[in-house]
Length: 394
Image 1 (cartoon, rainbow, N blue to C red):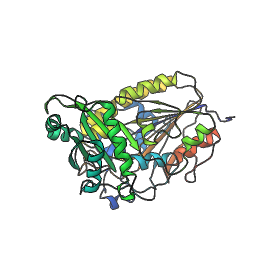
Image 2 (tube, rainbow, N blue to C red):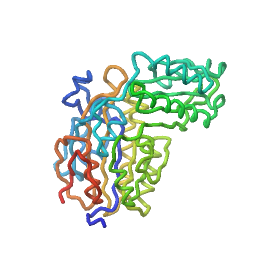
Image 3 (tube, rainbow, N blue to C red):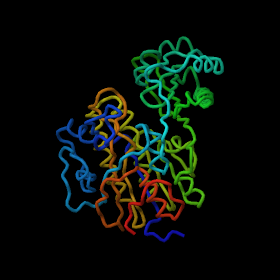
Image 4 (spheres, rainbow, N blue to C red):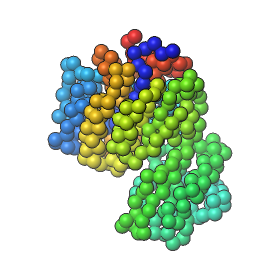
């Protein structure tokens, strides 16, 4: 039985909202990156009163955001011990796994000829693209050819991903998903091909002026290589609720219930609705708009507005929380919209911890993201990860 003051934990990953270059950022050519600080400076009237009250200004310098002597939340930073700076490694470490070997990426070379030929053979479509590209730009470039030739658009990014784009009018969703399943099987057949995720990227429209991606994206991740806190919670019959792409990131392992979302705002709305329900366990949320729509596209003003929207939605969520709830807000990596290139940035991430039954205290610099998972495991008295320490004073 759970003897802590908490019955429910809400973890919100503000995808890519880093708070300053990590100590090893030089290894990734990411010195001087600071996602939160730099996006805030792009908007003179930047305003995040809810996060300010929680103590976000005590973590890093943020435009129009004060340091608070008595914040309403515990506040601190976390550094990543896993290699890389991608979604999978960040989320897996949050739940207790240290990734020591990076997933392969194909940013410079495209995917191997042998892999592409086998994909074409098995899915009966020619592949075009096979390069690193923005998802929105490559469908503008190749979408009209795709409509005429019934091929598939394959591309990657700085992440360890193989993405397949197809127009829903040419390749129905079920067929696109099947093609991605084939690609996932192929990439698992050789270690040097084993990307972290294969992603289905459906779009609609008749020409490059009106092509638009749909919310029917689906990620096919590799299985976590070890037991996570999610698995331990599920084994002990706690609820593990995924909102956003969490279920995809963990390949549905340790998940009891999942909800897809179209955008950050819908994700926060569903989270607030979940707070009104009776459950016992974890509600784990990923808000990807920060990263996908603004970080990678190097749009600091758009990113700033997105954070302001999140701040407003966060205020409504806090109003729904009960005495037995604990809220943690963090990130999985950085993606400084003022940095060079379009890649993620190797940054420390924020950690805010709020509960009506929690007396706020500084959290300092945490040595691993896994402190989030350790805190959850302590609350629910389940198996603790091999890395990390609880952040609770109990």
